[in-house]
Length: 469
Ligand code: HEM
Ligand code: 2DC
Image (cartoon, rainbow, N blue to C red):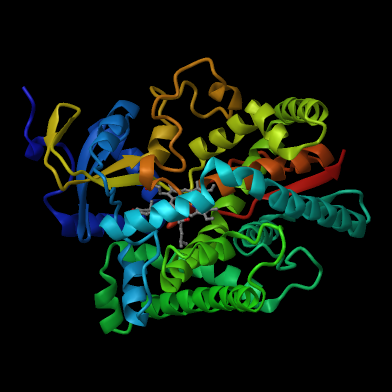
């Protein structure tokens, strides 16, 4: 017989004690490890209440399949109150990230066509290719300047600039020039604001932002300052394109970028377009750059694998005669590499949905309306789901075994990551160029750990050595 909801194991009756335990375990930065611990303690399903939100947590691919079948027509994930509070406070519209219901759906359908449909892949690839080539040139310059025929560095800051340059090229059809020696202080400020925005979001997952706002808490003030910086910079970029478009409405056959396409399409209000473009610009920086950093870190620890992927790339380069779009169809191991990075180092600790119908998970009844979280980080490290999970092995993603609800780094279904295709193309093209030109090495073989600052980040800087091939 199916067991009742109230029988699900876990510490959910006493939310205050739970919050206290959380503080003691430095839970804010450790959510991913706490989830891992909880699955070990309670098994593949548990209920919890931390602060003001309650959820059922699951880990198995079969359960993920049941969850996503019950997400309804307007899938809804955990609402990040800090983000909606800021917009309410400043009277700004929600973009696709924060909208729900019919409003979300109608915006998302229009955005899908311009951002994630197969139609735009061929359009984005050359823009992304150009940025990656400039990045390679910049690395050569750094190597030359070091005078040692190698460059040892924490690449994260360079990768942030690379990611912002890439996503901006696609959104605005223009280069910002972030890979030059002189960097625009406004662009650097934008990058810093995103990091601060993520960092200040975490505490507000557990304490209502409204409370912090009325008590004048520093974290709320910092959060507002961070979003202000993000919106101001995005507004400037958007204004520039908007003015150009009004002066010169049909400027040739060159692809004008996602923003100009949306403006010309005239299916969304200007305010809706601005809101979603800002979210895409902000969402396009830390996500891909950190995933690339983790990938280079893993490749530096696995020199043989590095060679194997390099061989795949050069074969693809030859048979595609250098056409990027064609090339991307011939690099399964490289694609597996990015999946393997997201398995061990996911950007998002969990995926969440409010289910719209009653379901059964692990033989427990779960009523409609419940927030169900799939522990993505925990799933990636579970030995029943991934044999030898501690081993970084991209070949596990080649077509030999079932990947049923196992590759979920970008989420699932109609509410999955809107930037997914941009991110995948950007990261694949980056790795193609970097592996064609350089070898990556790592000094000490100490394991780099993650810390939670809304997204998962390396706890300490990752220092890599880059050498020309
Ligand atoms: C949503 C991951 C890069 C923009 C999401 C979600 C995940 C995710 C897990 C939630 C999906 C769900 O609930 O099913 C990632 C990863 C990235 C990445 C792993 C890179 C490695 C990007 C980029 C952009 C972006 C480059 C912008 C260009 C968004 C937006 C949403 C989203 C706008 C909200 C979509 C909606 O609610 O309809 N992402 N993301 N992401 N992501 Fe990404
Ligand atoms: C964080 O418990 C942990 O892609 C919470 O590009 C649940 C939660 C809810 C929403 C998730 C968030 C987590 C991690 C960061 C995500 C976010 C949805 C979108 C966002 C996954 C798992 C992200 C990074 C977007 C951010 C765009 C923004 C900067 C405009």
